[in-house]
Structure formats: structure tokens, C-alpha cells
Amino acid sequence: MALKKIDQIGQSSQSLIKGDLKVSCACAHGRNHLAPLLAKFLERHPAVSVNLQLENRVVNLLTEQFDLAIRFGDLPDSRLIARKIGELSGILCASPEYLVNAPPLNTPSDLLKHCCLMYKSADHTINSWLFTGAGGEERVTVSGQLSINDPSALISAAVADGGVLLTQKILLGDELSEGKLVPVLNEYKLAIRKPVYIVYPEAEFLPAKTRALVDFLAQEIPAIIEGT
Image (tube, rainbow, N blue to C red; front, side, top):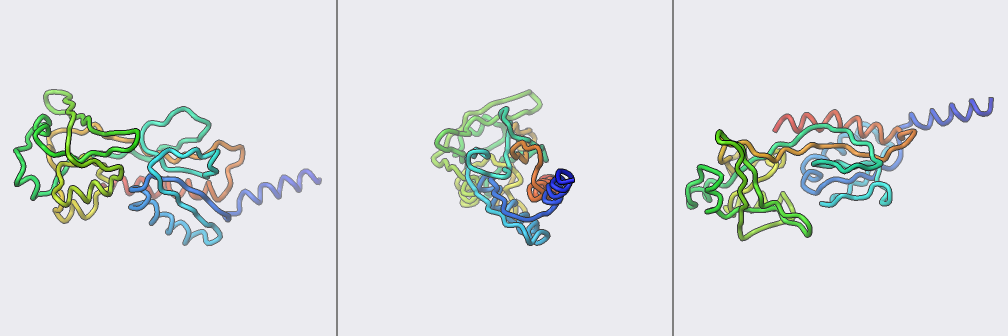
């Protein structure tokens, strides 16, 4: 009887959606999309508190005591549970003013004559851009005067006529709709598709607060991705 009661108490505690959650996400995606979604989640669950940590690095969920993370790109093997929720597509763009004053841009190789805006961190540089066209794949190693370790800052630089930018389409909002940036090389496909995952530590019993947030994000984030 005592064991049965303990088991019932354990099951009951799993069903209560309350407590603190610690979440990790890359800076640009966290600012643009995850933070508003978390506000919406907390409206539904007033007994839950969330601490969102925005960092452009892969945190260790176990040693740093994170409940879950949003991750992009291929994942290494680990003791984490990964739930794929979508795939991001890329876009090549520039400001109209930059394009008026720059050399013609009709093929990927033309990028060698352009100032390109690149993502660069302490251990990662994205300056090798891969395109697929009617003639097959073409890889171009681009260069430019400005590289930044933050996608949002790169977008701001592109709007300010700083050069040609390869970025994830989901990060662009008004910049495209208002014509501040325009797509270029539209007849080529970009090899920048990145899978999106919710990852969380493996556990025999996933806390109800974690399960609730995982399910919520798995429902909401795909709609944002599909809308881009």
C-alpha cells in the first residue's frame, strides 16, 4: 500500500506544470523568435519561470544544468534526446543601393568581385558558399572587409549597404518586405539548409514542465519556419 501511494505521488508530481526552466538558444534566433514564444508559453503556465540564455556556443546541458536547448545543424552523438522540428533555408541578399554601385552579379563567381559580409567567430568562419544551378554545384570562397560573429549585426550591415550577405531567411523580416534588402542569384539554390532540433537530457521521467515546453515549441516553431 505504501509503495502504491508513493508511486501515485510520483505520478502526480510529474503532471504538475510548475517550476523553473533553464533554456539555451543562439542569440539571433532567441531574440527574434524564441523570446516571444516563451512569453506566450508563460501566459498559459503562470506557475512556470524560464531563464533563457542566449549564446552562440553549444552549451553542455548536463554540467551547466540546462533543461533544454534549441540547436541548429547536424548534431553529434550524445546522451541527449533530439527532436527535429524543421529545417532552415538560406537566402543571398544585398541592399538596392549597394547593388546599384557594385559590379554586376549574375553568377556565383561574380561574388569574387564583391564585398561579402561573413559570419566569423573565434572558431568558425563561413566564407565558403555553395550554390547549385543548371550546371551543377559551384563553390565560391568569398571575401570582404567586414566579418561579425552575430547574424543580426550582419543583417544591419547589409541594410547599411555593406555588401552581399548569405543568411538564414527566417532571420529576415521587415528587411525583405520593405525592400531594404533584395534577393540575388535567385536562379541558384543555396546549400545552407540547417535542421532545427529541440534537445534535452535523457531521463526516465521527463518533468511535466519540460515536456510542456518541448511540446509547445514543437508545435509553434514549425509554423514560423514554414512562414519564411
